[in-house]
Image (cartoon, rainbow, N blue to C red):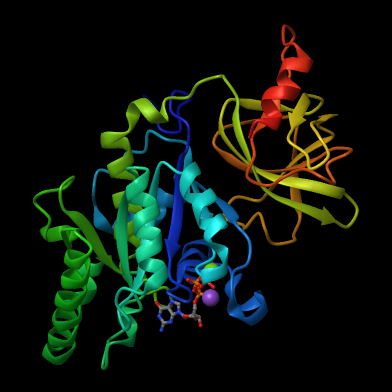
Length: 343
Ligand code: GTP
Ligand code: MG
Ligand code: NA
């Protein structure tokens, strides 16, 4: 398969964890953006989506000198809120993804929504990696900007290493109490049974290359079948939003298949099924957040996996979390309306 080939679709990865563990900041670090500082109260209140093309992942992981041959076109990361009141959004995010990043703040260890997220992932048998974030907060940490974690650890003095080991041990114990074996990813000989931990800093980027490489390698190694592109459209509505100049739009995650401008679609609505036509298919630029207002790219057609903003008439009462269906030439609209309302 060629790099960026057509055979596999992009990997969908969800990022979850307790409020303020650093989920959005980690994505900012990879994107080179500042979404987190623009959030009201620094709290994420919506599901987001960002597309990372293979090219960028390759650049970001180059220093690891691994065979990062990418067979997927890219990585679509779904950001979720960690605040306790958004359990439904965490559930929606986790139901969409192929695999996940569970973010734990090294200064706090496991917290209530860490455990809630963990249980959502286990319920669906979703593989995940643990990002042990905020390592730069260890007293005396020497910054090694964007360095692979083993390289960064070698630069640290004994006291930092001791504090790191103490906190790591405590957190491994806390996971053990939840019935989960965990280990630093570069010491993990038992992948599959034992979950891997990558120490990270969202501020200075240590460990971020390792995180990206693990996601891509793990997915390509264990999920080829699941990631094989199929034509049948599988698409979920993330958010329903009014956007100036576009009216009511829906943000969707296209998991499989292809959408086209002009496609007739059926979506579940509060007052019954909505049948409408896609007016525009919009995405943010690669490495930009879908939920943040910005300039959009217009597409005639678009292939999975992607986070997309759809404009169409009559979307005012669309219900987030439900499926979007495309009407094919042989489809019976009445039957589709019925099945759309079963969501
Ligand atoms: P919610 O989406 O609201 O659940 O929070 P979040 O998990 O997305 O965390 P967010 O990115 O909003 O970060 C919370 C705070 O922690 C911000 O002030 C960040 O600057 C800070 N922070 C995040 N990651 C790091 C890190 O690696 N090191 C340090 N020192 N601070 C961090
Ligand atoms: Mg956030
Ligand atoms: Na936050």
